[in-house]
Length: 179
Length: 179
DNA sequence: AGTTTAATGTTGCCAAGGCAACCATTTTGT
DNA sequence: ACAAAATGGTTGCCTTGGCAACATTAAACT
Image 1: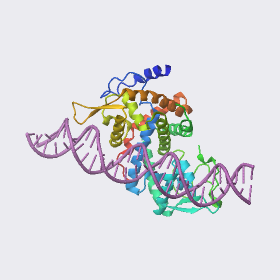
Image 2 (image 1 turned 90 degrees about the vertical axis):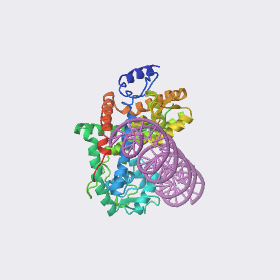
Image 3 (image 1 turned 180 degrees about the vertical axis):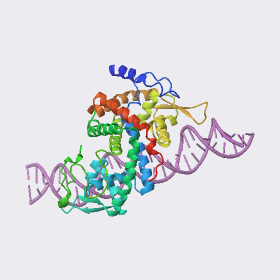
Image 4 (image 1 turned 45 degrees about the horizontal axis):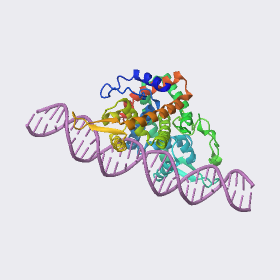
């Protein structure tokens, strides 16, 4: 195939240093160029960020990163239902439901049922939840600042724009696909 | 984009504070701007990508996304030890060890112990593993192509460069930090 | 030498989070 | 009006993957 030979030749060039230590000469067939494979980059970065964030927030504020994400959204949009949380943070409603129950039990949020719709609930931070939020956000912004400290202001803007475009284009990949 | 374009005033009842467009809550203090908060973007995108990839690869090729990542690395650098896999894909050695055991049992990889170092092992794709790899990579590249289809060639290059810089800068955030 | 220290994997344990089945309420279609 | 479908949440079950304790071997330092 054309794709095969083209991609193989392309990725071979930038690869020499990667296998300096252990890799044998792999050169038969198509391989990924891990220095340019975006899904791997994004997953790697996200995993490290989430793990590190959960460890840090848990240790210092007693909340994990999922709870922090929910709190940050509730600070922006008080009174939203759980379904809104799911769509914004991109999580399944199962974990969100359980996390909300845990946060309510710890007094971080208040849940009152919607009088207009017996299925829905209105969720908001309590005073305690807001106080926790106001402490965590300082650390969160500092973490983001450090993460982006390797980019100048213009590059940061560019990254945000590109990530937003990718974010809005996720349907092109998560949708149906034939093998 | 704002995901809020749906029925915004639905379950917020009469007190729906229409922070509809941009999510700034004037009543309170500091809040995140979720349209510009990079950690949230990256996590969201990575979760959707990984979930969708695992579902797709599992259904069509019988491998999950972790196994695929390991396979893609083994195709590039045959004969590496497990520690190398951990550092490249950013996973803990525990899951990697278990995944390798499962892949060996299914005949996808071969593991032989290093005669020079009794602790280390040399891991490589079998013929069957390589055959699976050669089928999956077609889908993987197509998925990446779709993901990036919202960017032109220059923007894609830019994104790769920026992500690599972030990737290499992760230590600034995962390292020690005081609250 | 011998004793500590470090590195490689394996395993136990646990939290995070997706999926599906389900219940309770609308909403819709006829 | 009433059955059918859709919607919001809850729960059970499962996979993924991190962390820590451990065994084994290699390296480093007396």
